[in-house]
Image (cartoon, rainbow, N blue to C red; front, top):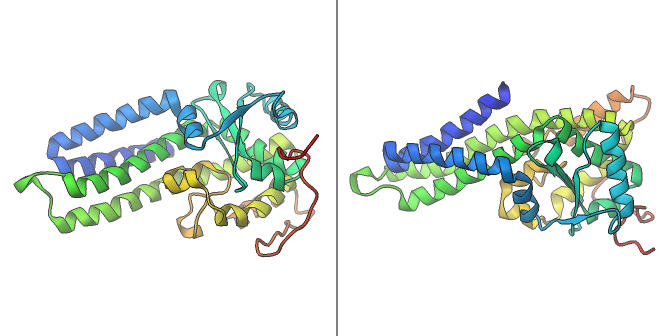
Length: 297
């Protein structure tokens, strides 16, 4: 119910921008565009996101250990085997997409596989399968699509919206350009943050190792925020898809604070161990991950 209301709020914001720059006709066109975008995204969510990130599909032959790990986790979760992808970038991260569990895909960056141990990678991929099992992937992709379109129409309407008397007041138009994307971001945050805690819980249950997922979050939080991610830079609305987003501030992040997520995972482990500590400013030396796609052999 909450998610449906928030999606309706995003659509209403999209229509309001259409009305501001095109009157009643603009609002109707915006509604039709939003409906068309949602329908198109429903059928093409996975291919949209995967192409955007230049992901390449792998199988049991091209990435045997990683593929087998995902297959094992999917079986534990009671899910169909998703398509598996790798993204060639040093930034450690992962995401899931697809309109339903039967058409799902999971992707991890090569940086993630190189940085984490097998148990930590399992925790991360179990988190992504948690999104699939909870059917978050479609909603999150739809939200990212509409939020990105709101920013686009706001900027386009400022320069080309209306003619003569129908053109909005310049100050109002500028305010819309600044406030509409911000309002879309707030709605996007409200949807994404609650779903991340649910996926963390599901990931811990699927992997059977909440501390490994907590350790993975602690390790990748700093590098994920500091390393360049060209796909997110081109379309910031996609940041919510990742397990840890690229963000300059927790206040404006689409995800809960990593520390809170780690604390919740450690509580699932009955507090028997201390949360793992990994400072992004402190260099680490460790053996390559067993799942490192760059490892020879």
